[in-house]
Structures are given as C-alpha cells and as structure tokens.
Length: 94
Image (cartoon, rainbow, N blue to C red; front, top):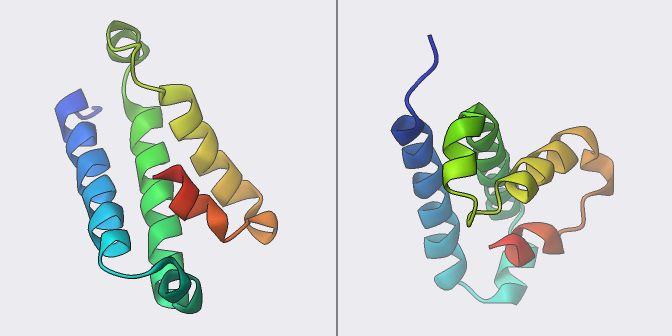
C-alpha cells in the first residue's frame, strides 16, 4: 500500500529544509571544500526526487504549479549519471 501524499511531502520538506539550513550557514567556497556536505546535499536531492515520483499523478495534476517533473528528473540525473554530476548542481537546485 502506498503512502499518502502528505507523507511524501513531509520527506520533501525535511530535505529542502536541511539543504537550505546547511547552505545558509556556510559560504559557497566552504560548501565546495566540504565533501560530506556535498554528498549529503546530493542525497537530499535524490530523496526529494524519489518522494516526488511516489506522489500520485492525480495529486501532482491538482498541484501543477509545482515543478514535479524537474524534481524527479534531478533525481534521475543524480542516480544514473553520478560521474557527470557538476558540484554546482545541488547549490543551484535549491
């Protein structure tokens, strides 16, 4: 049985809050020098994309003002093209 959209939305919000809080607390230069934070940010974007993919089409259609498609695409790019990931991607995505 699939989860309710609210559960996935909570995951999305938690990961967005994590990324924003972490990126607001350090300089851009420090971000690029911190491999743990870079990996954590990429993982958060993967979770956001995965949660997005699990939200029903009907819910996404009712809330078409959200860019669901690109949230899911980011996850696919991070998962399937990890060798070609630009370190600017997580910072630019938020």
